[in-house]
Length: 577
Image (cartoon, rainbow, N blue to C red; front, side):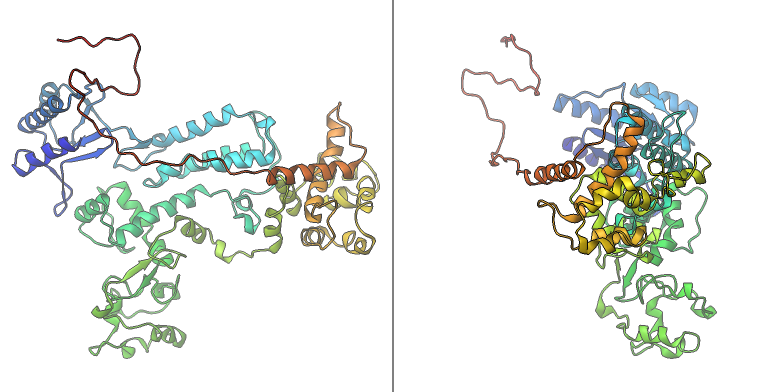
């Protein structure tokens, strides 16, 4: 394919191939290659088609490859007449198309994306869900699959497209139903609202992503690369097409602009707000709409009366003729605390080099989609409770961790909660003495209290059996109660809570199930099995790599060498011509 590229470039240099210019000041594009795929750009004339076909014919004769006419198509611009189109199609033998279809699963279109363009993502998610037996998976298993498979499906198209919100909402709906075990015609109890489920684990969620916000973070990375002066081909094309080197929120978006350009310009306000500029010469940094004083601090957000003559000022315009900050320009309308912050910054100067845009939350020149996603969601303002960190560090199965997560949110489907829904009475089914709340079902009911009394030391029973649900959970996750047969107390407690909830429910709904007689022994065995499974992890034996140069060698005299691909069929003979 490199030889084909050389042939095309030679034709371009000789003036035989007229390239496509990306805008008035843009670069010339003749062809794009990726692996075995090829896009050719040229003028819609018979001479150009003759030049193209001659190059393809010459390349095929040199390489032994052939053009696949069935897989090759021509896309004409709207201003090409039907007469010219028919002539070029007949001359080339290729079929005409109205769209380029998909490439690596992503629609190739410059127009605003429609829901129908991304219906294939919904179909992919639905097909994957149809293959999984929801009822055979635990809640933890469904969460793991939702994060690793369902959530990952739309990520690649998100990198370059603003996927319609309705499409992402439908994927989220499928994800929610799958996590809570819903099937068609069989609705289930959604214990936690989706906003809380999509929080990071350290803030009480399960770490699932909010797809619409994730889409914005991915597109903001493109805007950041464009503003930071990246030399990528797509950046060069956009620089030439729209005749600008950076994006600002005050830019006017024209109707014929591509959807990619419209999207990154619309999101530029977030880019300026959440990325930080290290001031060098000050030429590239907007004094009011960019964050250059503190991360996330923009003067335009402070509701200050910026003087009319300074509305379009860059940071370089805020210094006087001696190269120092022009305090007389700013002192009249800026607050004192803001002036103090500016005084701590080195004034812009050519000696300091170019301005540098730092990635959001990273403090480096690299942009982090994950950090930008967290900033857009506002996770930096959330309180990080220590109990969530302790919960996810438990040495128990993921099923037990997810159960304790539900307990921590007080969202078990107890009789008390079902009574709020009008489904049954609120009293405990087993003891009948108290309302069946979460703390009653796991600690205070007579059928579970005796088990706890057999393992909790006397000196710890006052703290263990006192307090509300939150204090009980915090106490057991950070308790100093001694190990039981080598099992940490917090691990035993979590596994015991799971068993004490599931055993009575199974006895009611599963005919052949009977609760273990020796409850403590059974729980300890479960914990021990998990401990042993973690300890038995052994590194996989790796084969020592050996570097060997592979190249074609001329066969010895009297021999014929036949080069083939990896597939072959036996019982064949090479005959002399």
